[in-house]
Image 1 (cartoon, rainbow, N blue to C red):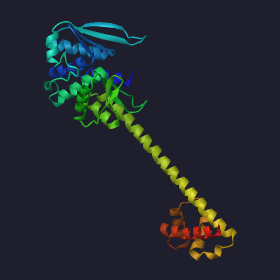
Image 2 (cartoon, one colour; image 1 turned 30 degrees about the vertical axis):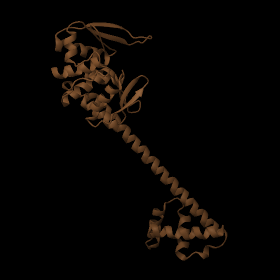
Image 3 (spheres, one colour; image 1 turned 180 degrees about the vertical axis):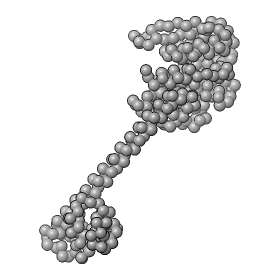
Image 4 (tube, helix red, strand yellow; image 1 turned 30 degrees about the horizontal axis):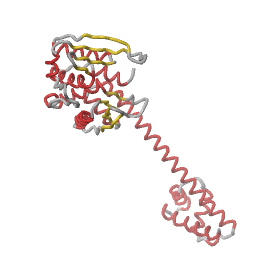
Length: 304
């Protein structure tokens, strides 16, 4: 079962009040309903079909006719079709459904407060939403709708919660999407999909921790490589000076550093400064050590 189905199954079991039911139905009929003399609503998710059936039955005291058939193109999934034959005009009026409108954006009473906005977004997700499993792929949540003006309307509702959703044209449809892991988690919280949220956050935290560990390991490896590269160059400079018999041209402090670099070829400058300070009893800072190494490098450059 996909993560989208898991989330929809959980959301479909929520208990909601009548005003929220009307708002949720408004989003569902707007996105997956076919309206003429009847209202037909189609979905591949059995839990969503049961919820739609209950919303209609509880709100209008009628029982939609349910038809089940196989999907097109040898699709193994079943398609559940709910047909409403009674009170069609009343239902459409309640849901703020406009037959002659392309965008079919509902009137404000449908989404007039925070609870209703959440209900509307829940209906949009149940009908045209999908979310990637955080364990298997990149973070991605999307809604695919048929009208740009309506896509912007849904995006605006999402962004009342600062979810940073964006709209993109895809073929002949429009996609409202989010890619930020924390924002997708916030959306699950808004829909009250608590079990899915716990799973999602566990995976997100694990992935973030793993990525951070990898970055730290890469950074540490880069530092090690840099230390080795620097030490190798310093040893090469000292070797050139010794081959040319010009070690005596260095002052005593620089000469001492050359001896200790040869003695401890694998350590960083910070570690080398500590070693020299301990073994000689004379404190030398990393900056002072770097200054003496520069003298060695300059002499080696002249020898070259």
